[in-house]
Image (cartoon, rainbow, N blue to C red; front, side, top):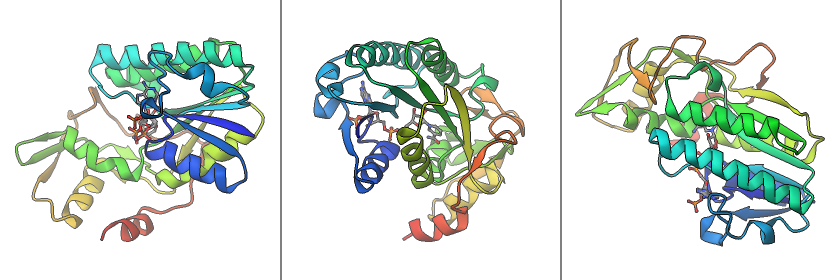
Length: 249
Ligand SMILES: NC(=O)c1ccc[n+]([C@@H]2O[C@H](COP(=O)([O-])OP(=O)(O)OC[C@H]3O[C@@H](n4cnc5c(N)ncnc54)[C@H](OP(=O)(O)O)[C@@H]3O)[C@@H](O)[C@H]2O)c1
């Protein structure tokens, strides 16, 4: 089956392309570097020729409010139009658990806009909402750093390995469209500040992590329900400790 992965060179995209290839499918990794730009529409028609499924795991290069909204809206419109013209039968989108609970954040408003376009669009779809990737914790710390201090909310998070997210997307992509949203989360919950402290300490990073209930996560204050999944979420297998011991050199 030909499956086009938009953002196929990114963290999730590259893992997904590898898994699909191993499973005997024909994945096409699409990104601006390979001449396929979802934002401008360049190269989309050619890339989608003969494709049955498109998985959109692209991410915006800039996250200020206007830029990120424009990215997810324009890219989604371009993709859905090109997929319709090419006769694609299933559009899969990767979104974030709790997206609709964080309207103070421009990034999450943009993800809601992306989801709305997919749901209102002409194609059979599946939206996979994932929790934070273990691999993303460093970037969360970076985004909350002032000087040598990282100010983070102590809200609960239930993160997961990027590998597990890619495996679920590979299953979803070859299955029937659900025309619905499914959630995927890691097997354990952590306090965000404690998890970041652990990651920085193990990497000998000198920054100090401070818990602050008012600290903003990409623009939004968090509580214990903001980023945690509902009862029906699929639970990814990899535990943080196992991932961490493999990833710390
Ligand atoms: N980070 C998390 O914890 C988390 C949690 C849940 C869901 N998500 C979602 O997961 C998705 C993927 O995240 P990621 O961390 O894998 O992203 P990433 O590593 O930053 O990769 C982004 C990909 O998007 C591509 N891209 C950028 N602009 C593009 C354009 N105009 N047209 C086509 N492709 C373009 C990039 O291509 P180049 O390499 O050529 O730039 C790259 O392949 C995002 O939608 C995000 O919202 C993230």
